Image (cartoon, rainbow, N blue to C red; front, side):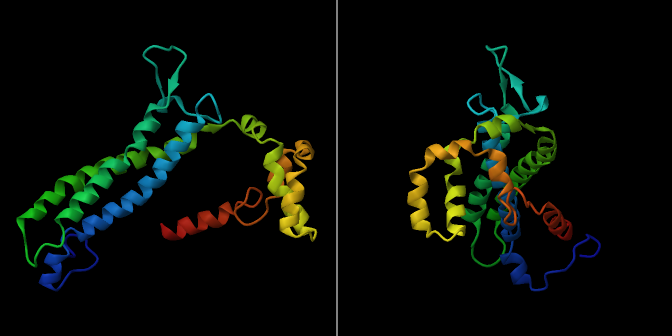
Length: 216
């Protein structure tokens, strides 16, 4: 084990045999957890780059042109990244269908290597693109702020009334009849009032970075 750089050795030969592919399965599950977060990001980006929202501008390297519309910038790379979960999910299902054989070695287990390597290769390749994507895409802050309209401040007003002593059920009813008054509020006002840990005005990025540093 030391020659190969492993931290420890499995001593029991029966355990060594019956655990075959369980570690591969765990590696794929861990990979899938990251890929699911990546897929959510890709879905958000593919949605918010559309003309209806236009909240996000992708880097040129992550877009391609249209075969018929010269003005079009398709988020093709993001959409392809969105599909990176499929090989991992397929490989997990393949391994699960092969596991729990009788004790001892069985030739069936050689069929786990193909899906394992395919999923790891494609999944890790997709994840390697994410840091560059996160670094280079840009939010259109003005457009995003403009999308926050009056009724979206209703919860802020209800919380203010509750903090002043009004029972929330009464504050809820009161705000429902005051939608027109909420038009005077601004998005910056709402954002600056969100001071709970992790909210817009207290992101705690330094603490999150510290946690990541401790993991790595």
